[in-house]
Picture 1 (cartoon, rainbow, N blue to C red):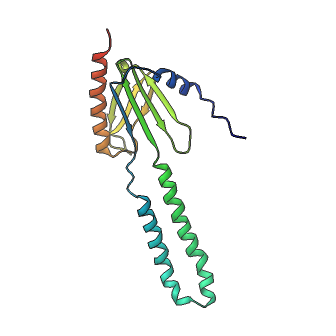
Picture 2 (cartoon, rainbow, N blue to C red; picture 1 turned 90 degrees about the vertical axis):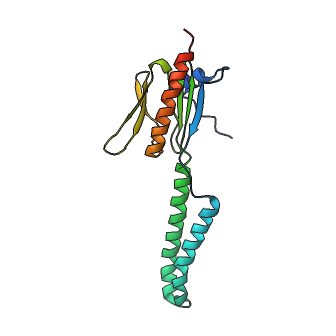
Picture 3 (tube, one colour; picture 1 turned 135 degrees about the vertical axis):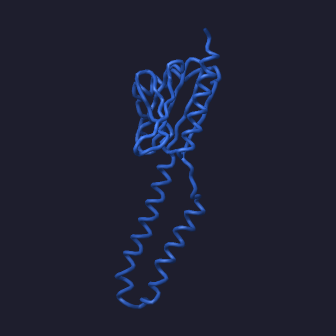
Length: 179
């Protein structure tokens, strides 16, 4: 018996209702963190680590000490495997930003929790960038009574570029909106 699809919450339902349109958006993009370790690189990392751990154990072949140390080596390689793959899954986080003349919508796909949805009229949306104690160029969107963080996984320069692009596209969208 298959499990039924999850029932969308109100925010998700409102998002999908608002973005189910036939007209093309003024701007649409997907931002995601940079993934620098390929599957080939992952395999090479695991093999190198396992070899580096096992080489010193060659001196203990045929002794009880080998069997004492081997579980610790195996646990270290397994932990490395697990945490690299978990990091890979965390890297599947992304944000979809879409702008129409009368609607701006953001959908954040989280790897281990439900997605987050936000939409507002672009005329009332403000793009804000400020430096905080922990994060230079902290980027937020404010509108529809909420303020959302955007591009937290981007570099400081990446957030600055996204801010400039969003401001430009919001101006373009509001200037093309029907009066």
